[in-house]
Length: 549
Image (cartoon, rainbow, N blue to C red; front, side, top):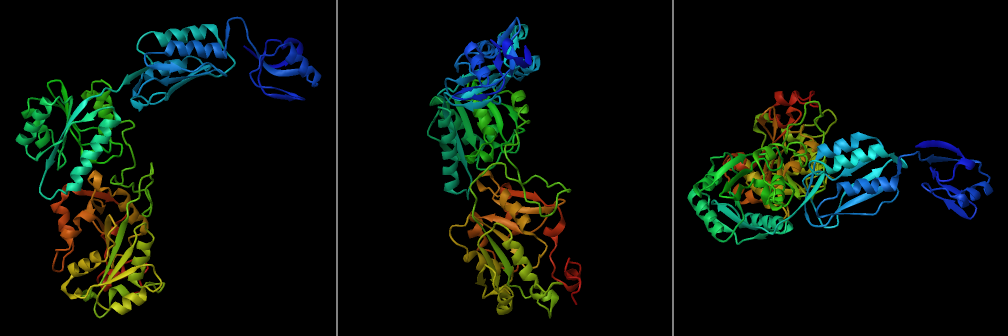
């Protein structure tokens, strides 16, 4: 192909490279110049144009894209007509698109004139959805190049294949443990049903049983007799080993375990097995959430009739980080107040904050530590509240007790709710109960902040809020620094009744050990979450409080 300035005397049959506006006529880019167009250009005062002239053997862009599209076609794929060197390919059925990257990459590496762009491999598509586009970059392709491309597209494995979803029957076993809320069980069923129906399947009536191997195995066998073609176990407690209760039940029912775990997050703790030829899975805790996670990738392949092998699972790591995971350690190079990015919008959970400011400050007597001003004259409790107000937690409830009037005066003008603990002398639990009782009914969680930790910044609290997701098992969120657990801690509403029963001069931290499977740790960039200041000597070491006497 010859490209460049072309005298009009030589331009007949050439392809116009740029749109030219004439009086009463527009010659668009890509126009094949005939004698009438050349005459209009001459009348418009043009002596030459920028154009492409095809040489012997060159294939025009539309013909080239048309031929390559035909070579890439397969069952359940359709195509558009060629226009401006482009042809689009579409799915004719809902299903899973599988792309062979080696073939596509070889085509794109063949010559810069030809390009093929596709959706990612193993993504679900709907009927009529575009799955690929073929685009010829210049106005023509050398004939020998196109012939090689056609041969590459037709020989060997297909570059694109569409696997329609099959209407499978799915059996679900829900296991129960004392204390698991009914709403959690219902949520697991709803999320699973939505997944199955989105893939054209049907969820059989779920089986509910104790979280024990034998009852689960019996339930799996009952579902097999009902015609289940996929078996799922949603445990009341997350599976932690291929010999755990759920996997052991699959084995007891006559099956075997193929693989445990996957490099996809959320979705790490999945267990893949089979009973006879029926895929049998123990679901990760995140399967109770409707959000995209590793179980979706596995179910999509099963419904598309594709085998899911351990090698397939282990090959899912690239792209397997499906969203920003706040429980990952924060790199030390990042600043202490670096908020975590959000990769996808999600519904903001309403999380309140409690600031416990009722204590008698015995270790700093006769001073009330909460009222000691920093070098700018700001009392410690005011600095703590300002930090909390700098986070997304709302509302902010301040619990008062000892020297109530002075504490409230120190917080004048700040948008907080006060809750007074009449029995504050009984200790920390009294302050906690008073604050929890003041929370609005609609809050989904509460972050409990201590009034003597002025170094905890608002963005640190936001990192806890970002990690909070009870549906995915992160119902208690605690900050850490180099593995040491600190404060503040964030608690889901489900734990509030239990927290209201605590007595004595203790907080709720011991409950985290009782509910360890619901705890998520968020690593912080500095030790602010470990530093409280309840003595004069300690406070002198706090930034901004060096002048304390």
